[in-house]
Length: 284
Ligand SMILES: Nc1ncnc2c1ncn2[C@@H]1O[C@H](COP(=O)(O)OP(=O)(O)OP(=O)(O)O)[C@@H](O)[C@H]1O
Image (cartoon, rainbow, N blue to C red; front, side, top):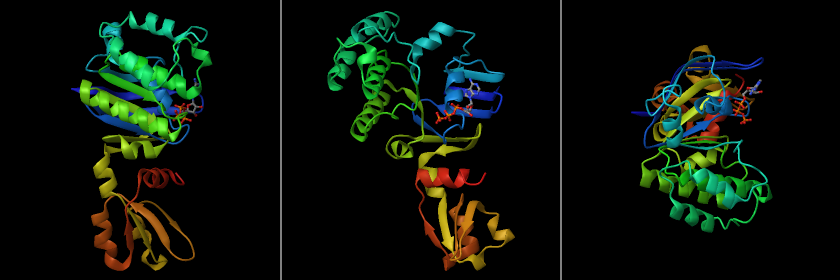
């Protein structure tokens, strides 16, 4: 079964349209959702969370649509997003008390473990926490009810590198213990160098690339060479290519195909996720 399955999903705003024909988030893996600012990540996640009304299409979480089974779906989802919905003036111990009542799988021991690990003072109100501490508290709450599907919108954006690594490690650990599925958006591609099995790239409201991280990184190649080698035909194999007075640099999806054309006359380099995102969105 898929953790999340999307078909023909669309949402129109005045100046933006989201259109996702098909998206299948695999159960038991971490899927990273990457795209530049304004590409539609938050919109997609809000639609999945039923926080925004879709125009068309279907979204299934663990095989069920929201309208069928609202409560049982919600219990299996852990969401960390830009809107927590917590009462800002309440002490975090009170927030925890109120939330934990709703979950049959609430794990107080695990919650305490995270609170101690993050050194969060439970006597503080939510608004007294720093941005990073707020995210740590949200993560502690979310993971402590053992959700089957964890959906996060830019969870690491306000965290310093040390805390970010810790956050990613904790996430990885929960996936292994609970066999949870994680779908998380980020524009910090280096997060996904560390944690992430599958990747979905979004740009201008459309999925432009998806697949397992290893294959995406292995198959793509940055090709650099002399300008004379470029013509209308050879240009076709590039996702995008830029030229300057010395030569060209471009990204190809299939290194083998590029080798058949250029052989040893060009240089091939392994791209990282940042390179791939840049070439896919350059000038388009
Ligand atoms: N409620 C809304 N009304 C009108 N336009 C909206 C609304 N919500 C989002 N948009 C527009 O939809 C587009 C995509 O926004 P979205 O927040 O999904 O992008 P994002 O990929 O999450 O970006 P970021 O990385 O900056 O958070 C933007 O152009 C935004 O202005």
